[in-house]
Length: 130
Length: 124
Length: 244
Image (cartoon, rainbow over all chains, first blue to last red; front, side):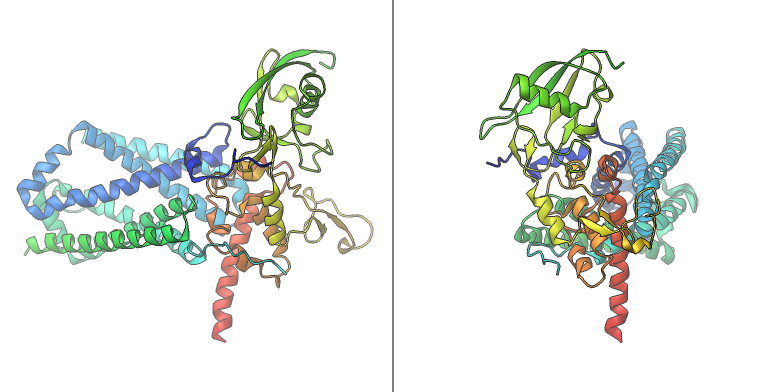
């Protein structure tokens, strides 16, 4: 008699984000999905916030003062890191789809992660010393 | 002869996946342009309302930002749709989700175009 | 090493009928150089005859003994105990994921077989269509004379490891898509149309966990990408064909 245990189910969605006992490619997938969701939330927040621009200088410049707070700056840095990683992983996906470079997907991930870290440090220095 | 699968879903076939990855490529290019011109070109690097208005007085900037908006909104919503498809929703549910995403996307792009033109109009 | 005896706790997933699943510990004396499957067989023989598990060939050809060992998919007939646990340690053994459990460590893998059949995967192929992994020449005569068992041993470990297969049962999955790639070598069987859908090649998100856990050199992730390129090429060709 077959049970329901272990059956695929939407309720298992949290497993998308579980890296335990999984290899590097799954890490890439997890980070891609998290950054995708994060960037989408940021995108719509960004569009809403930019409405202040249509309300004149007082509204927008007031908002910019708020945007200098450390929490906002850290949030923006996270957005930058997410964008760099997501873009590079997208290139990895495009590369392995359109060319026969799947056997090198781990190496590509390592290189792109290194670039993400370097890019993030450069942006972090610029954002926190501005 | 291969058996046909009555339960295969249409939806994210070659076309939509290819559009998603192509939009992604455009985002990489436009994001670089967007970041460079936002922060390095022009007076004050967009630190005040007036800087933004001056920035938007260039019609090429308006065109670039609207194109960037279209590309980013489309890519992000097609991507969100892919994530939802992984949950294997029923066909009817997916239709409702599709309409929601189309309305959200279209609405965002129309709002963005309105906003860009409004800011450009402040410049006279 | 060959005379060493270790004391290892095997934490085995148990599930009978509609009762709640649980883990049961069995302390066993084992040799570190033994295979995990041998220890599981001894648990069944000497400790609990109600323990159910699948096994057949004992040499990584049948694919029956795939299980999750410490959370990772492995063929237990070729997994050495010393590679997964130390003396005095605990090793967790669970059934494959994403297939419904029948009992204890046995899962219903029927959907995999149906999917493989639906895409036209052949378990026996010509060496020309599916060369040996190490590229060794077939021997006397033309290569076309030789047939071999396909690399895929239909163990289901790739589906257990796939993050997409965990939430949707309609995804064809890495094994069937790799099988479709093999079947697509015959261009007239319509398999490219079959896999060009939301539940086919486009559902994969390039985690490549399937290729990591495959014990048999199938490289399902790579085959999915090859299949994608074929599907795209076919789509482009069909545009020109319909314009003629």
